[in-house]
Amino acid sequence: MEWKKTINPVTSIGPSKAHDLLFGCPLSVVIGSKSNRENCPESIPSNRKAIIGTIKHGLLEKSISAKGEGEVQEWTIKDAILMFDELTKKEEEKLKNNKLNSHLLPIQHEKNFTTEKIKCARIAVDKRKKIVLRYTNKEISYSSKKVKTRLFGPEVRAWDLEKEPKNISKPKNDEYKLFGFIDFVESSNKEIIIGDIKTGKIRTEQGLIKGNFVTQLELYRAMWILTAQHINGKRVDNLEISTVLDSDEGREKIDTSNYMENLQNVRNKIDYVNEIISENNKVGNVTSKLAKPSLENCRFCSRRPGCTSYSDFLKTEIPLDERNDLKGIIISKPVKINHSLNKYQFRLKNNNDNTVWIVDNIDSDRIEIEKIQVGRTISVYSGKSIIEENNPKINFRFKCYDSSIAYLDNYPFD
Ligand code: SF4
Image (cartoon, rainbow, N blue to C red; front, side, top):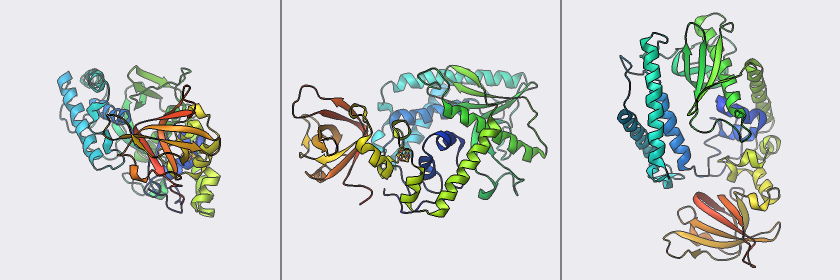
């Protein structure tokens, strides 16, 4: 689980990471990129909601796809539910071999699983109906064969190809910095629609479209244009193109007029991080230059237990009652919670501010309980801090969930 001592340059990234590179924490993108992700492994468990999001996305993608079908047929609710179940099984197979996340089995145990499944099946049936109608009216036509270099249909591959690649169906690593699958590209007489399917909320609490979704669509647009130019052998940026987010609420057009400017910004930033890495690729150097710890940036970073910068940030800068992660010295042995098979609680002291915490509900599957010994340093991730008002000996309670995990001592730095 420990990060390797050196960091590799970034070869390419997916458009969904570009917003973090430009506006969030560039280090998180570097360590999550293909060339580093094995050396800097994820060490925070996922949660069932995220897995169900992947299943929903898979079903909606299938509903607009004609892959392997001679004639595109409508679906019944039963068809869609069967497919949802198949996709669930596939995700469960993956989880079986995943030490960090096998506790999420079975996925059906998530609250509201059946309601979510039926809701998603209904949306998929509806999407399918619309696609069949458009096929019948010849508004769109997708190749049902698996063609590598196609520009329309579901899952369209696109690169930010600056120069003519040697082989357009398989550009080489040094010919691009961005690569991704666009969920769908449709063409009609009037315009080309580039779209991305989202299964969760697409707006911020202030009602704005999330910035990372806009950046992602801007890049898809730029990448599609560049890929199309190399496939067609001519410029295509004079075409009428619109970009949409396709969510449970329907399709929403997104303004992506800054697409080329942002593509250039991403390329420049990748050059910048690679320059830092090539000057001195030691983890400490790269971390000190690229990490941008903040509550917002780090909250969902699954590599935070390995990040020294986050570890320092965790010590002091997060308000005590807003903590999802906690670090301190163990001051009492773990005790099994009444009537529970594998849940424990123990106390720790945060040496920076001398607050005393009770860590509650930690699962023995997530940490070896016999190693929780008084005097050792422990970090607990993905819980919730609660002010303890009626207990004079304890200041805060840190509530653990199924996805909480703990690491002992100065993991991974000692
Ligand atoms: S934990 Fe925070 S600072 Fe460290 S890599 Fe992740 S997002 Fe960046």
